[in-house]
Image (cartoon, rainbow, N blue to C red):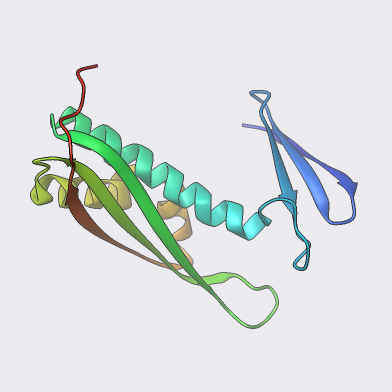
Length: 142
C-alpha cells in the first residue's frame, strides 16, 4: 500500500491514495478547512469498525437501517500529543435488531477485524460500547 501527501500552502495538505482518491488535511487550529491528521485517525477507526459491524449484522440477517459511531479521543498534554484513550460508541438502528448480535458484531470488530482500532490498541486504551434503537419503518429489500 502506498500514498502521497502534498503540501498546498499554509498548514493544508492533500493526501492521494494509490487507488487515486484525494483527501484534504488541515493542521491549522484556528481556521481549518479540513480535518487534522489526528481527527482523520479517529475517523478512520470509526469507519473501519463501522464497516465490520454493519457487515457482521447483515450476515446475521439483522434488519439494520442505520449505524452511527460517536468517537471520543483523549490526547496527552505533552508533545507528541498522541491519543491516550479512544472510545467508540455505536448506535445501531433497525427493525427488531438483537442486542446480542450487536454486542457480538462490536466485539468481533474490536478483537478480530478492524485493522485500525486493533493497531491503535497496541498503544492506546481503546474501548467500545453500543446501543440499539428501534427503527420507525421496515427496511426495504435489497
